[in-house]
Length: 174
Length: 327
Image (cartoon, rainbow over all chains, first blue to last red; front, top):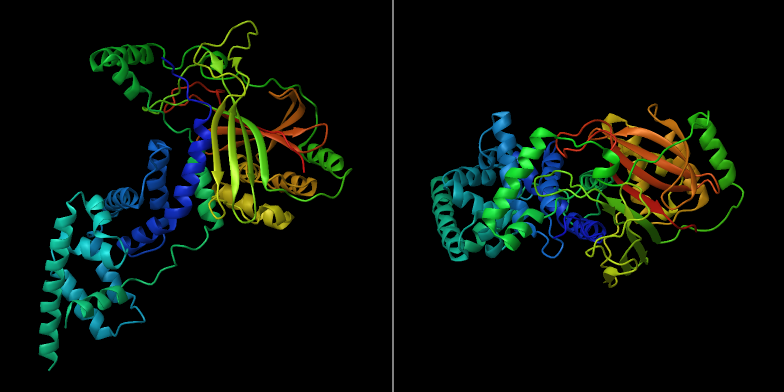
């Protein structure tokens, strides 16, 4: 029985880690930024995620984006707890109101925020991972530890709920 | 309003952010290198459990804990965890004098271009899954050869180096599981676009860019040992020119914590002078500068004080990298 690390392990691990970092770091930092509603700590939290990945990395089975996003989700929650903030989704919605996208009118934005607020926490996460992070249903299933079918079901239900809420707004405006 | 409208609205609502596929910033590269400074953990305990069964593994773990409580750091950094620290002879020179002397040697042969290749001998402390340093009787370094091209094709070849006894004894025979020198441990070929280059412009960096990169790596702490990490990043991807080596050495002079530790012979038998400075994680980095040609020959890292996480004593060598090339 050997207790020695194979000499090849380090350079190979480094090469694999560099590739993983280059491919996913910006995406993970972007996810954290979206959850926190601020860019400042996003890279540091993403760095914590990749620190964990480095420690646990198996070069033969490097982590994919779902694992990294899931870990980022936990790290972001830890940070928010330490900062006495609201949930990630609530903060992200608040940011949506404060920092308008150039593609949406103020009224549309406010209506959407209100509609998203009416979703359950899990459904809202699925919607945000789908439309803000462009994850597939399979990837979201890995992030949230759900069956892929359940992701589709919840997404369908969330869209229906949003449609109802937003159609209601349209009717009110008339 | 149908599902398509909802989908369009939701996509349009995504907060404006930097595209994820942009090249990494210097800061992000520095973050990555800092992460990789820490020895990755091995999965030995899991293997142990699989081999001899969980009950026995648990018993061994209990013994290990008892040992750790009774003697947490062992008796000798040199014997227990890796190679003995290098022994330096005082040379009575300032950092400026060492850098000037190296620069003069580097200036003797001008010309040459930076090359996309690196060749080095390296070793790192083994850390188990609990994050603790693992004792070893033999140091088994690896020899890495990296070549890559502008189109990001390349090859990374790692072969076993010459093992040696951690306590410096020359008569010991390595155990059977130590790979024979020259054994190919890994051989990876990168098709065009596949090599994950981190400093694509490293070969054309002038003195200001090199100083800026080192400053980025040093971060707010401003430690010379962290700035040396930028040098390590550059040289494990590039073979830089003599001018660039001089620029790296001059940039180090900006760090007040840099000191000359003396002259010695590195682990490849080459005469060098050591410039040391504190680094993150209570570590000390020592840059080895060739007294033959002035080029940066290597870098070693050791613990500055007893490390309660790694459970290794102060002065333990945790890694070294020795470059073996010139442009």
